[in-house]
Amino acid sequence: MRGGGLRAYALLYLLFLYAPILLLPIFAFNSGTIIAFPLQGLTTQWFEQMWANATLRRALGNSLTIAFSAAVLATCLAIFAARASTRYRFPGKGGALGLIMMPLILPEIIVGLSLLVVLLAVGVRLSILTIIIGHTLICMPYAVAILTTAFSSLDRSLEEAAYDLGETKWSAFRLVILPLVMPGIISAMLMSFTISLDDFIIAFFMGGNEPTLPTYIFSQLRFPKSIPMIMAVGTVLVMMSILLLAIAEYFRRRGAARTGQTSSGGLL
Image (cartoon, rainbow, N blue to C red; front, side):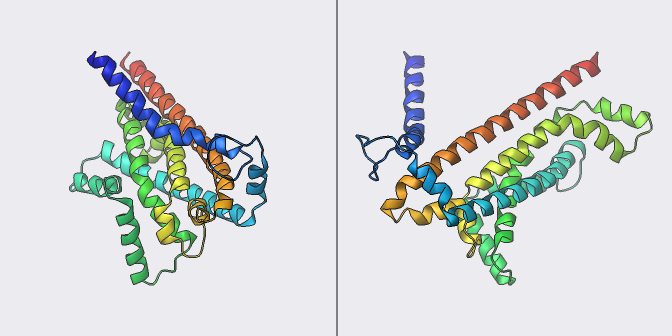
């Protein structure tokens, strides 16, 4: 009975959590402008209106630019942090990692407000670049967590064998270690891309006059006639996020399986 009750609770919780997301595509194809049942009919006009909106296309272009830049920067910095944390011992290692992972536990509104105050104090003009800086900061902990797992599961004897064969530290990292952790790198980059693309708070504080997709969606919620189009945009975003997260999970599992097989082979 206890196990059945826990399963029922878990199902109800998941239904409560994801039911609004499941309703997005239903109302995105509804011909009526009022978000309510019964549906008035099926249509694709809201998707057509979405692609014809110039401001929306500009916001989408900004979001893609920011997400790609933040994902690349966060992943590159996370490679160094994860490599250092799993391979070397140095004073202040725990404190440094704690500072890197702190955005995971801090309220994002506090992070955004703090960045805004600091950047305005030093005279930095708010733009797409400042959003990239903020998104890099909040994406790094996720990338570090993924890459730390990838680096820590490597068999160190492979690196030592490369040194015995005459490779330098850089060439051993480039030719041996990097290919083994590449699935983890791709997974971290995709995860960072998804987080940056969906983020609203940092973009709201740091964007200035440059719209991103989440801030544009928020600005359109005041206009009831725009709600069906926003439903269409939300449907596309949900599908894109699910696809990216599924690809990231695939590469994460592929990397774990590769390093596991390699370690077994080294032991043999």
